[in-house]
Image 1 (tube, rainbow, N blue to C red):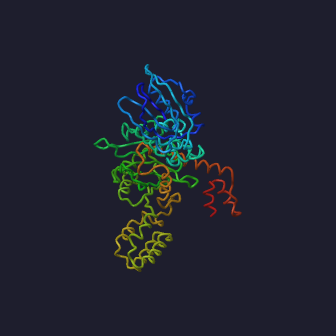
Image 2: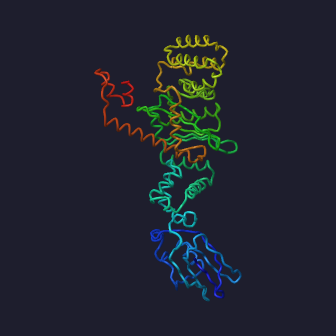
Image 3: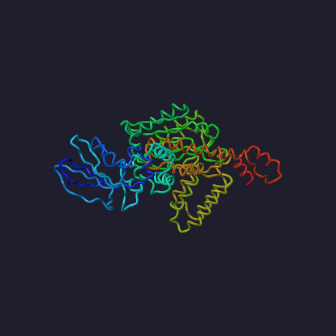
Length: 480
């Protein structure tokens, strides 16, 4: 308790300050010894502010007591009635002198736990090292509760942490607000410019509307551009991952490397999913890749994408995602009583027809058998059969991909980095983190190939030859 008593009054007013507990070790490490040494009779302060600051820095639970000529009275201390106090008297010269001091705590166990609820003490404990760890971990994809638990573990328990999860969240929010002073898009643009300065191969393009608000933006980092040179034969494009608070769907270009691993080849935030927007995106992306076109391009059944690809890459083989089509069967056809029966037969036709003619004959037979001639959705699928039926893709290299599930695996990967609340300026840094993680996976696979050789399954010389030229993942497919 601090008692501030004026010259002409022996009565006091007690005003409860924030309840704070702290260990002796924490006190010893918290500030300079001259500030944190216990109060003693005769200690002199030049002003009330010095007394108040000293007492707060001491972090001793108790009561603040003061007196003025105009307001007199008494209030009880909260909860534990701890007797700790510092009684000061103001001299005629305006100095404040300690007249009585009690430093021994009673009725409670001093710990740092409750000080986390007092702003001034939280600020003292959020050191530069804590902030660095907070931002590094957060930018790497960890959420605030995970970071808080990690910090608590380093301090041997939550009870030894003098700040809250909410306070860490507020620090993150303030940092975001600072970056957003000039606007969300400007912050993102500043990041792009910095990336381009560090690496001239970092590529980005954007468009703004008549109201000068961001419409579309796309970017490809240097590593992805280099990967496309080696593994750009087949590209998967997906724009179904998430729509954020700006109503800008997050789209991505995906490929596969020599280990069969999914690789990122570019990202975009799009204002509209129409043919004009996709045409702009595909044109800019192709320009980024030195106008080297892929052999095959996988998307869902979006008509706007198909139109845009015809304009931008007319000689590239466009394929619809087979998985997306088959997952619609139950929704489109589940109303029929014999659905389960003809579904099995149609799947068999789709997967096991070896030629175009075989598919067409068997498909027609199933349609007639179950009287499905009037089913418009099935008729539409048959009309576009060259876009999705495996028998129509024979003789082309597809890197083992029949669907956009490669893209969906990337979406799951991004789940640790972005969500619908992610701000614009955060998308690009998180994308870079994702690319770096994928590159690390590839490096690990390369190293594993150098360390070990898979045993041969046969005595055929051709198998031995394959083992020399294929990565382990691809050689395993040959063996199977």
